[in-house]
Length: 225
Length: 104
Length: 215
Image (cartoon, rainbow over all chains, first blue to last red; front, side, top):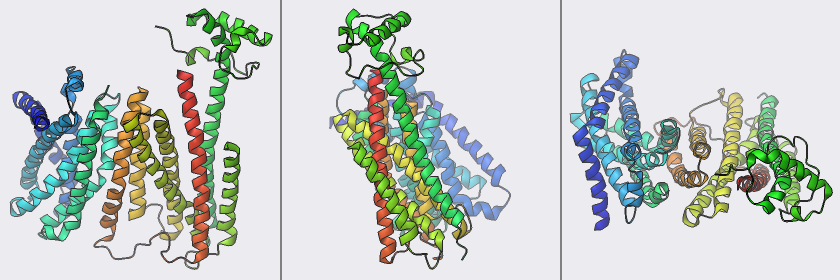
């Protein structure tokens, strides 16, 4: 399975680089912390209101840190002139996409775990009680996020106004994922369990499948030239 | 229930204005391009015969170009795109260099 | 060909206006404000048509790299965004006297708003990527992602608005429509579809000329 091996190599390279420099992870951790401070300052007064808004706030935090994290997804390739390396790699370029996707997914899940813990501390969110269901929803939503995000990050990596174009392209497309994730999280945190929201879960799964498929099929066209 | 004709008119007018403005924008750009192309004709004439042209010399070329045009039927002009020979339209001294790439 | 199309467009628009203002009766429930629907509904349908064309053109472009496909996709996206804007604006103008507010996060307005922003992004890519060939490739990908997202947006927004909510939502456009209303809608739809074709053809011609001028 040379294809899988290629994807794995990309993932391994990124993970190794990250483990050595810890650049992204440290910065993202502090960013998450700051986000929580800001949420507290802007919304923290009324306990009732905040606890109603918690699912939305949680995903807002995920989205904001995701934008920052994904925006840097192809930074090393661009800054260190490794783009040609990507272009010249043999075989199906979509393996690179899957490798990058896996790396971004892991990074985002890590950041989201930290954020969940911080939410538990700052907003008294009882994460532990519904953990399996919550984890399931978070993974479903994050896969969709990372799938489109990786594709658009590669696209905008070499564009003039990438810091602007990337979120502008990404956010509207992610509306279904956002809605589904927030609604499902709401249900889980309210104790309703996943069975109450199977339609949302199916939507999330369908979105994930569509985004990954498009990414695999079009990544080649993005990388060219 | 009050009829709110003003709202109805507003909606229809808005649609008309948006579509109409877009159409006019397209027509205007097309006319601009046409006049550029016609201005390029006289310059491209001698260019196709003489080979490389230095863009900074577009002044004298356009003069000879216009001269060629008014003489009509010079062999030079026939080698270019087949648009009808006409006196260049308004605004002619303006924009030729912008439609040509600078030579390396 | 172009001339006949131009006359057909004018004919269609006149027919649409006659149907909309003369033939179609005043709506019993909403009054004459309901006539805005003859602009609003055909516009959104034409917008969907436009974006479907963008999807097909984008796929064709990515698989064949034929420039004509790229031009058609670009032109169709522009006209589609225009019609989407008209949809939103006419919907808001209809909403003010009917619901009492210019904007509400009801399912249909919200999904059209998301649609609008998605394809504005498509046009932004066209505008911000300098290399024409790269712009073509990138926007083709965006066109495909956006189009595939449309049903997802539709369902998610609809469920978001209608589940756990009392059924007080007015759905624009009655589901059981007497024949004359439906006929008026169809005539106006045909008219706006002709406008779409006319504008796209003109834009494609202009794009081709622009490329030739640069060559």
